[in-house]
Image (cartoon, rainbow, N blue to C red; front, side, top):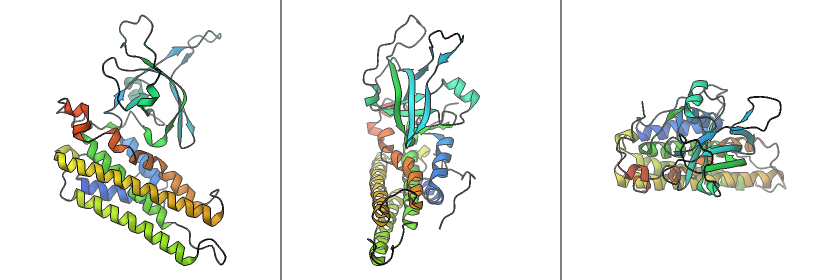
Length: 325
């Protein structure tokens, strides 16, 4: 049985590493400790950097006898994610099509103070419904609409750190490979710890439980081989991938996410069938630790899509493979 890292952060590779190596390292880290692996990845790489980013707004609180009191964007932990509240001004030019990043503070303050917790939250375009036109007479501010949220749920897999090294649109294959690898490793950890039979009269006979475990492990093995085959001989993301390979990798990463989702759902169903309830079962903590990875894996190729569907890369941003300054 794999052991947790007990707070020792594992090493994470980057977009200048070969994608096959990224797969091997990520799968191993996801298997060892899913929670620590995801924490390390998001603290190391700001995967949301290529997305449209809104400007956080600070609003004055009505007079309460406490001068200088203000209201700024804030997030509090919630089930499988965070509850996000505050106001953000969207960019003047261009309408975010699918996703927008909402920081808790502007870039200079975020980097100056560091982030004890995640401080960059990604929401879908649907969250922008009802954004109001910007008001006031501050002519120096962008004139885009203002988005107001009050306790909006943001899944843990859509959260990262502004102080982390930013990825670019050209780094998308690195993101897909990393997240798919972490998901495969986390799901393998789940199959390793699937419970056995409950004994005579239990809902799962020894043979049935073993067969399920073998079936799920086999599915993961096949997906890992398929992804490894797709990445055989592939260069690093920063070296540039042929368009055909990029499309195939995106499709394979999407398939991995579907298989991993099935594995975790089947494992959870076995827990329910065997114990009559999931409360307190040791496998549940592993599934919960894997949830942010799965949330990200299901949308990674939509967040940073392949080249011909990414307007930021089609528009001639040829240098977007380099991290700014």
